[in-house]
Amino acid sequence: MSRALIVDDEKGIVKGIKFSLEQEGMEVDAAFDGEEGLKLARENEYDIVLLDVMLPKIEGFEVCKAIREFSQMPIIMLTAKGTDMDKILGLEYGADDYMTKPFNILELKARIKAIMRRNQKSQHAAYEESSIIREGDMQIDIDSRRVMIGDKEINLTAKEFDILELLAGNANKVYSREQLLSLVWGGKSGETGDVRTVDVHVRRLREKIEPSPSEPRYVHTKWGIGYYFRAR
Image 1 (cartoon, rainbow, N blue to C red):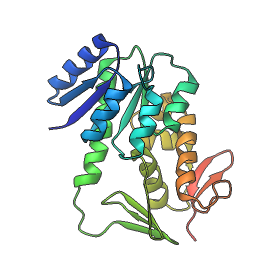
Image 2 (cartoon, helix red, strand yellow; image 1 turned 30 degrees about the horizontal axis):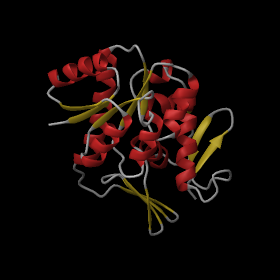
Image 3 (cartoon, one colour; image 1 turned 60 degrees about the vertical axis):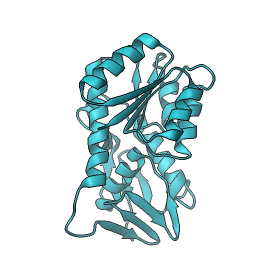
């Protein structure tokens, strides 16, 4: 059974989301402040975390940052403000997606299902041949979703890995930001989403895999077009 964690101090919202997800057969835990939410995240492994920005005791951004120090469980930030800065900060701290309140519960469930489907596919899909991409001292294991550079494992979020897998699996092919938004985030995101989401994730990815992010070795920018993975 899939498990979800809702961290929000608005009990009415928590009750509504919890009921809706339980109707989908999910097991749902709830926390009403950042401290309690972080405690539950440390003690359990969740398939999805819904994390409000404005929380008592520890704000949502700090909870997201803390979770990323020990887990790559998917996180969707919930923000009442809806400002670009809130969205960008959430992504910078390691969130996989964000939604602005008030939101449509059907859209929220669709996003949750999409994230969980991608994760389950990557974790359980069986391949007849090993799916490993090697470039220089980087090794990307598609089956286990692990990235090694030399002897060091690089911890990537789900979206960061998806971007790297797509680019490295199609080396030297340039993808526009709109294409990446659509392919990685799914659906019609490329038409309706904010392409700055892609920029934030690529910047975070570079900070983790590049010896010098300002002079990238792997993920390059094609100015005015998009991004590509350079194979030597």
